[in-house]
Length: 162
Image 1: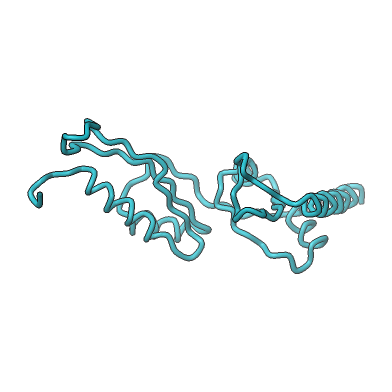
Image 2: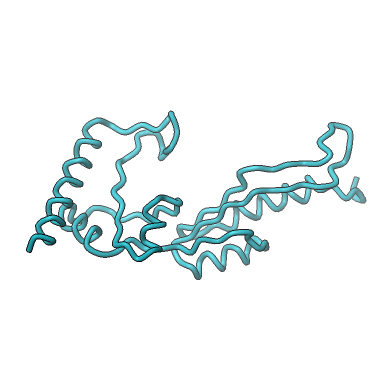
């Protein structure tokens, strides 16, 4: 057994390295794993994994990629939300926690193009599951978010009119 060149065993070790490498707000996920030839009685000769890594800063992203030991096929630099939309949300929600999303939202594309951008998240009641039929937020929380967004938009409109 020790002399086998088992690609799945190596992939399993890689998956654990991916999971254990993410620190300080970084995220790393192996979302798919394909094994060839894929027969129950054949030692896997090849394993291919899809890896998604995210970090709040480019430096943390570089460190995470280095710790895992792979070269990404595609990379999107982390980008901060900035400008008047963020200032407006901060003004109407003083003391609210600010989160690093890490997800590839449309806001990321806009911010990367230089468009002042911010995001408002609604609390999840099911441990943070989102973009899924299992996502769940309380109606009161949605109402509070709509009120905050309305107030922030009113501040932005006033600023443009001035």
